[in-house]
Image (cartoon, rainbow, N blue to C red; front, side):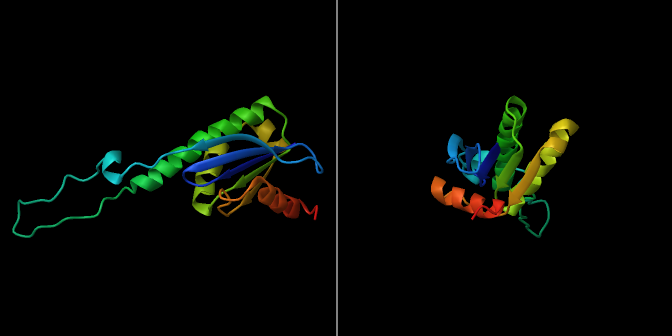
Length: 147
């Protein structure tokens, strides 16, 4: 059985494929809203007026990237729950490359060696969240060498 996770920083879709000739089944969908930057928080004290020179500097934290990483951690925990409840032989994680790094780090921390050895993880570094189920299935068939 194959588990597919198709996500970007704000949307995630999960699919299951039982066998080669069975259709792709939609399992779940998640979405994450991105607030405005000023609603996330602040990491700078503001402009300094203690000297004659007035400086404003860029914040060191990109709040939108941080929210994307939090979302990927949330969907990674959902993936782990599914991997422990069901017997999957393969996991496809389809996402932009920046998010794959966060996903990989989360799985390395939380997945036991039994699941790591029995599970084949494939990564596709593309944003496919806008595609239909049939288009995603076509891509998986090509990746598996079934077409």
